[in-house]
Picture 1 (cartoon, rainbow, N blue to C red):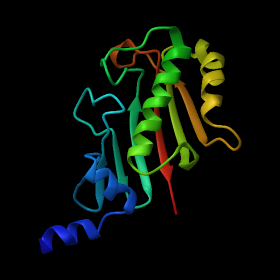
Picture 2: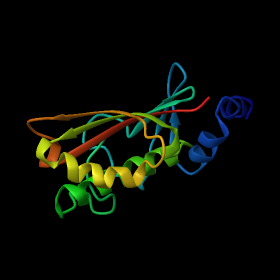
Picture 3: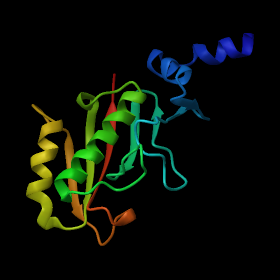
Length: 155
């Protein structure tokens, strides 16, 4: 019991509640793996998110529906919305919110979709949006049209 109590004492309140709900797993060197069924399971050897101290690194999210594991239909707008909802779910599981996002990396299959992507993206970040980079790539897993990766931080 003493070892378990010590292990719990090292967790943040947000991660402690996530651990109890099955959302966080502690790792070495102060790393905590963040996982939630409200976002799609990883389709490779990576974690949905990793928290180190007050920073959460969210793996690139594509428009997979977490219930079906299938890519959503409806073009870049629908895919952007689903990818951002997946990001938000992982942030929440780690005790963060969109307001904590400080940096975003976006990968588009076609930079011609930039304006349509921005229309949906702006719905998620009102006010002072985070720093961001957007690049066109030759291919995204599952032939998705967009992938979004974020870093969130708290003091």
